[in-house]
Length: 234
Image (tube, rainbow, N blue to C red; front, side, top):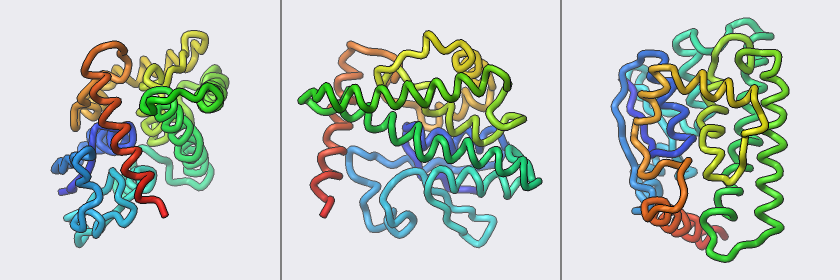
């Protein structure tokens, strides 16, 4: 049994999708990020960085893994699935996983902050991060023109990138002109395990929608987390 400490974010859903794909039994431990549960001593003992997701593998002497990419690699290697075992195949998957970890996730996260959450709008910052998101999406689209998935067969690389790309509207970035990316996004969305995974836990708001009070409330809550994190930075 695996305990998954998580919340309804792209990084959290990356791991719940993988667990569903792999059919591994797990217990959901949902943290209320707006209440600061990720900063409690109990959770910091699991992840010193105070971020979700993290997991505890109860079947492996309570082994702890934090960082979403590390969780995906651990689960893939534990089961021998969602990532090839040969050096080249494994490297291809890890390259696209690192592409998400170092590029897509951070750039979309910053786009969200400046486009959605900060009450003061800074056009240069919004343009910078939305532009970088679009550049990264074009990289994905170009690769997917000649490939069904990112690294051979469906893998943790697809899971990691998809969990973020599916929220592109929340970052204010269109993919209407990227047909190969849209094909890949739609195909993965049809997978039953993916549909289950993005409901573990369900999001408070549809990140593809605008204009309702739920979205506005979510943005206010996210801003409070950003400001709290900023005030704790030395």
